[in-house]
Image 1 (cartoon, rainbow, N blue to C red):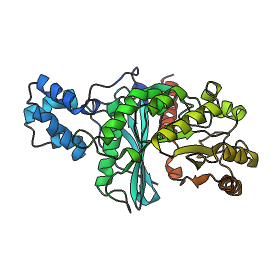
Image 2: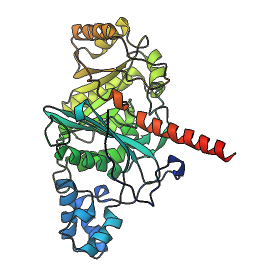
Image 3: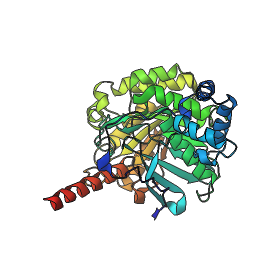
Image 4: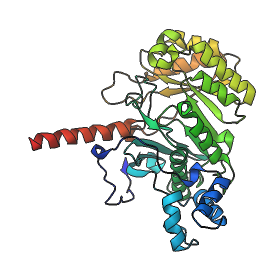
Length: 391
């Protein structure tokens, strides 16, 4: 594991979690706006409309997030534009690397003290960013570190996009060893339930896929949006006419167990969730990814593999099996490799395409929410120690 150097924070931005303020949405940022709205914003500030394109070219085209580096703008304009269109949204708290630099995880503090995480993963043919859509999560899945933190708040459009722009800049710098220098894929599989922050996630997707300088210019087909199964939002997504990949976090093929592992299943059952997923696949022609975290002696029985195979046989779907990344103190653990192989065999025998996710980032607390949980735990321990000394 490598601890990477962080960008210094200013003295007026305290680091301690104990200074965390009441959750609130951040100030407006360039990435919250489309190009026309940016033009209106800069003219309101007394700047010519073409400044909007200049700013957008720097931010989305050149991946420059620091207005002081935008030297083709007059110094006076930079000061005005920083406060109104390029405020600091993400302050790095901790950045870790492993896999010889191919996996890099960043813990961010937002303007109100909330914590979120994002991960950059390099492969020989691509670079993928995994980003958060909420600070915390309200879905309460018991095996998930983020789910146990509860929901702090939704992220803004720009807070989501800024994670991607930063990670794209890291990739462009050549820091991700053995990978292309261009970010090509984004997965909404970090902290939070993306479809519970629906309007902002959809606008973030549009910003990421609109050609530069208005957006980042990624392919919609290289964007994956995950959900635990919020059926109304899934059906709303069908009507968006996007060609993103839908990933359904299923984790159990039967309602009895899924009610426990994914509490939202108590509202929308397996059959209803799968129907919505299959309708999305039929409408878009995009294969749905069925996410299934294999948990020892919980959901890894052969009969559950057979049931899952029966539910998915002949459908435009594939299963992405996830060896569970256990969190400290958790009762949940990953399935043994022989059990995993038998699960895969049965699914493939049923005609269901199945892959096992690459287990990246275990040594840097790779599961979403683990760094944030650790930071909060350390802060609370420090606060308790300070209180004891004060006594």
